[in-house]
Image 1 (cartoon, rainbow, N blue to C red):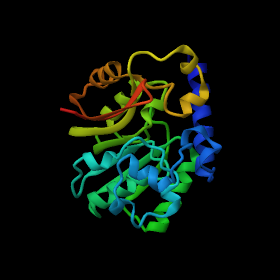
Image 2 (cartoon, rainbow, N blue to C red):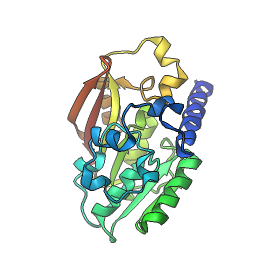
Image 3 (cartoon, rainbow, N blue to C red):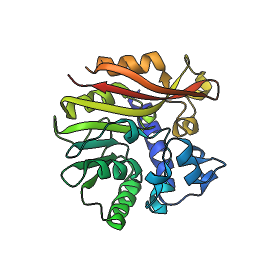
Image 4 (cartoon, rainbow, N blue to C red):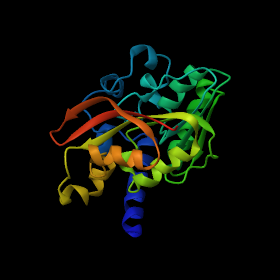
Length: 247
């Protein structure tokens, strides 16, 4: 199992490294959409106001399934952790909301994405944002350090979701909250999809049944686990927005 998980992780990392390097839309299956990246960003929930002012190097790497910052209720001065921060769009939007007294930490396992996000931060002069290289199953973040955990269509990519939710719980302060957008399934996927590495990178093969996904969040210790929104597509999967609290 460990060898299989590592194979999945390396393939996902390679795929998103290509996106960070500027792969065109259909060079990688995970970002093959007919729309422009701006149109795609709007389709999954980003507003014109949010996108205005963001450099193309941020928008072109958007590969999410929602806009977690829109539902996170972020407040000035809060510390936010973005799991799988990519080119940084959610981290930068969160940084605007928490203000100069707050802080946003983005963690991504792909070195090319972390370097791109750091360059984007320099372009935007975003001084309250920090990007760290690391795996979301082993976060390079101290215990009870953050008020809010956000993530956008990334946890499905992990072959060890129990560890992801356990780590999110560990780094949250008591009373903290988690707001994630992700992909779930309606029942189990066929093995030919589950074993397909390209489908893993495309945010499908690693998706869990919705009930199993929510139960893993509860098993990690979270309370008040609530699905805030759900959009069905492709007949077998849905994008969901989930909020949960650490009591």
